[in-house]
Image 1 (cartoon, one colour):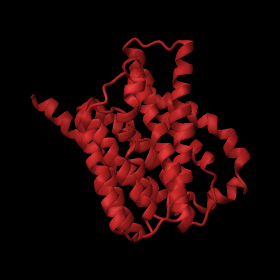
Image 2 (cartoon, rainbow, N blue to C red):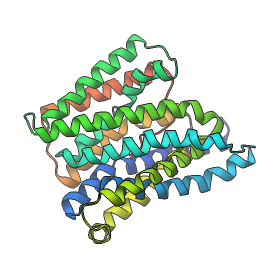
Image 3 (tube, rainbow, N blue to C red):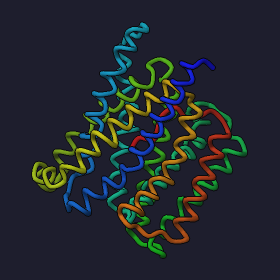
Length: 310
């Protein structure tokens, strides 16, 4: 390895680590809007803010590079990116924010959503014609068992925890479907254009629902939570995805995928330190099972190049 390539690898790894740190704060910032600021911001509108800005930023970076390598967007490209944005942003991330409101702990949301590679292992045979190996099947079993533990985040099953669990599972499954779609289109568009275009289309799809569904005036609620919302949009989303793809371009997809094992652990630690959340035997055991399932999902086949959209 040359000195320049070694330097690029270290720079890429540092960027990936920075991205994971930012992604690990998304649930905490979302909880701060709800609990600390006592603001009511509709999940649809929050998704629009996060991914409209992120989409513009990623396309501003990715399109010039794509044009230089000869990519010319066709009319049907918009349909593919819109489909991915509908599944991976409009549906998945909206449900993600709904689930955060239902869960008691931000850490529970982070760990359950982080199980999405387990769903990828389950859906890839249907969408990408990949083989369902025994390792993938075991990953699904362990990850699913770990996720179920979060119905007991308060020590016993509660309706809000069960609701949050079911909604977050739907969110993770939809995101896994988006990952499978992304696997088929990233070779043509590149990761920046794929994520940027999908984010932009998905955010515009949810905007009408955010304006219509909000039960309180949006402006005053945004003012109440201006700092966590600003951080969530610019830091946890736009900067997070920018660093992730910058790192992905300078290191291996394997290293990028392995780095995501840090997210559920780091998100849990940050939730305990910042929000003083309390964990019990169920949530600790569930986190361990999800991590083992993630490791098996990675070892069982191709690595996922797209990060967990949050």
